[in-house]
Length: 149
Image (tube, rainbow, N blue to C red; front, side, top):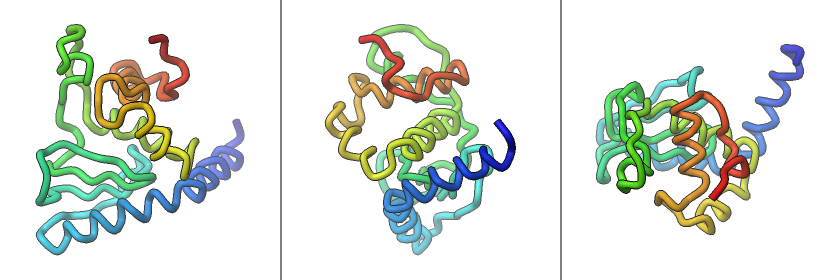
């Protein structure tokens, strides 16, 4: 794919998911009032708010924004299936898992959140979470329709 076409696709995806990104920007900005930091991550294709001061820990993605409680998305975390005791898998890089969600958001735009919630929300049953884990494990397959139940 030519570079100009790839840039156009990325721009269209970012525009399509802009309402979701706005949610993340609002949440991340509120955290900045209590010490959260923000930076642009080219590798995750997102604005990353780190050291978010509230919540149980971990990260959440909204469009092209990622809010997380840690210092870096380079930390390792268990997959949803591993955590649920369904299998034994190596820990994945948190940033890779969240990048898959950024790609999902860019493809689905405003449809992402309703579909994500219909698929079970934050759980091992959710196809979006399993696809993000697969992507973090292999570097491929971020789209949830590629999964077999």
